[in-house]
Length: 80
Image (cartoon, rainbow, N blue to C red; front, side, top):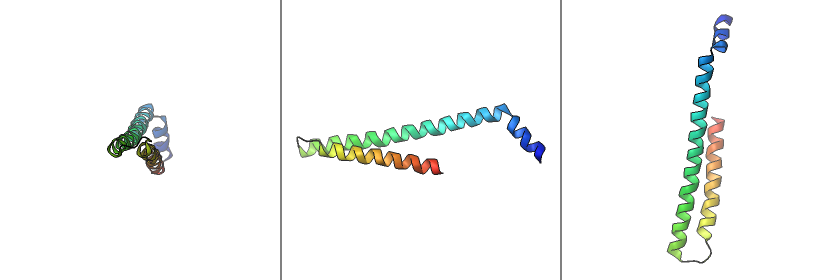
């Protein structure tokens, strides 16, 4: 069995594929985080326009919630 393990370590094609898979995984995670934040900010802006308040309360609150939700999603995916 040590021969099989050493052949896995020496295969540069396998290492290159792992790098591409990691890149795709983490770039997808970044787009997911951006999407969560953009949707919550957009919702906050729409709610502020509906209420007519001068202070953007919903934009601030929902954007902060979106950032926390994006971080939670990222940590959850990193643990997996």
